[in-house]
Length: 360
Image 1 (tube, rainbow, N blue to C red):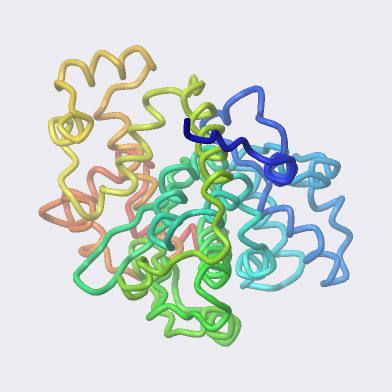
Image 2 (tube, rainbow, N blue to C red):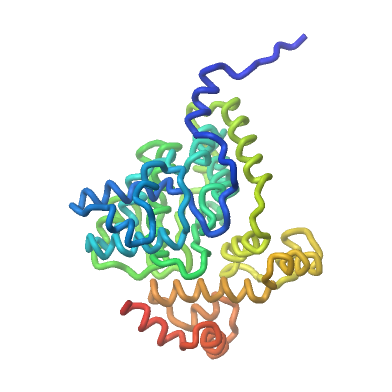
């Protein structure tokens, strides 16, 4: 008879470090503090009392004592905007991510540490980040000999999307250095924002060329890095973590419409996104897609326009990408069609929105 191997006490103790299984799944539009918990010590390093700033963002300072606490994604954006203003530090979001570690990603970070390979770890991050963050979405694509890990904020009207993107790319690079070795560097980093006056903080952390005015935040690195084994990975602990995460995802009562938003945000600027295309991706009939969205209170066209508006808003305010390129990225054959659509969404032309947004 084959011996049955049971998890040891040390395995159980190590698993307990991930914290208790949450009773409720993270709702759409919310985020576990995790990485954002680092905002408090950074504000103190700048000589600022964090409590009044946190309250001004509509949050209780006591929440920041535990990274497992949950806040609205929009509140995180407000807090980062206030932090930038109070510290006069335009790369504040970068500092937040730079200070965070792979364990700041909670149970997902722990699973990454115990994945077989770096590729498995990055796929786990893409598949399961939603249990930590329901306001942004990652993706991983392979293009010949390079891998592209991207990160996009999709929650409507989130302030400081550029700061959030900078911070998440910074902690992702930290995670990759934990998995690959401290000397690991990406090939380049692409950011959805205009180039700042001082590039040195970004170059110092990423240790790679940084390019700006991109449609999405992206870390570019060699495909061969995905095959690297993760040192110290524990298969028993990995299986236990995967089971817990699957239970959390399986118990999710999140709106189907939020899943569609996440899917659209990763595909909008790269692939066709008609209702038929999305239904095919989900292996369901178009009528089934419409029926499920009707149950959530929003139709496909309304969600599609919401994501288009959110992408356009971010690119207009945070980057210097020309209107024609934004229109093309969003699937419009002419800039004039994009301008008409944007006026319907906002009541302003894209040019007016860009000017007004930069003076806020």
